[in-house]
Amino acid sequence: MQNQAVAISPRVSKALSENRPVVALESTIISHGLPFPQNLAAAKEFEQILIDAGVEPATIAVIDGVPTVGLDESQIEILAQGDIAKASVRDLGILRAKGVSGATTVAATAYIAAKAGINVFATGGLGGVHREFFESFDESADLSELAKASIVVVAAGVKSVLDIAATLERLETLSVQVVGYQTNDFPSFWLPTSGYELDWSVENANEVARVLLGARESGLESAVLLANPVPAAQAWEKQEHDRVLEKALSSAKQQGIRGKAVTPFLLEFIVNESGGRSLAVNLDLVRNNIRVAAEVAKEIAVIDG
Ligand code: PSU
Ligand code: MN
Image (cartoon, rainbow, N blue to C red):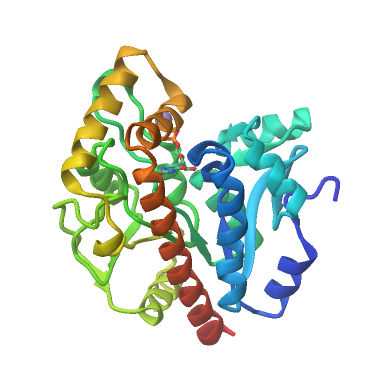
């Protein structure tokens, strides 16, 4: 495996070579986005949802310096213990030089998955432009990397701890193709809506597949961000959501949290302050995104197979 740009597990490699559907999953959500031990159970469950749908799961992380596509159980356990670097694209060379492991963000996962030839990637929420950007200059590398990865990313929009309007503007500037899944209202993670209207929506997985292939036929190299709202029955209650988010933001400010620590801090604070309610919604929306991603991957395999 040495000197290999990306190490692909035999299962994923076989599925890809046989043109069977594969869905990539990120690992920062496991190490920094969900609390232990729920994260370990969730990581295994996420893969199982894909297996049950007849799709090969490809959880992605950097293992001992090597970007790895398709993890085994012991590697997933290491991620879930949490004592691992959060890795974006800029960290890949450093991790490789040092031979250390890292959990990949949406940015790094999309980058690696696209290199491996995977067409679909499911996550929870995308990083974005933080509020008070003009003081912090904090914009997630998720946005600029999606400009360069030809892959469908299924996500429940972005959290309203971010500046949603600014995030959508940046996605436009970066030519990331944003489409709502059966909606024209961009979802805001725990809530199915944000009030920000999207230009385009798609009705089914087949249409999503054709959007990705249409983009490639047009010579586009950017991602398709499929904005998939959490079902209304599973969403967080708006009033409680607003209260907890307000508190999380002021707490981050008070404690001077900066850089890549911001997103994990907010997520952990919100889980605790909501008494676990936000976590339940978070898990439901990821499950929902994975199910949709599985359907999209199957449609691409049929059309492109
Ligand atoms: N949003 C979530 N859960 C997460 C993340 C974002 O609802 O776990 C993670 C993803 O891995 C995403 C990363 O790529 O945080 C973004 O971090 P930053 O804002 O530091 O770029
Ligand atoms: Mn940031």
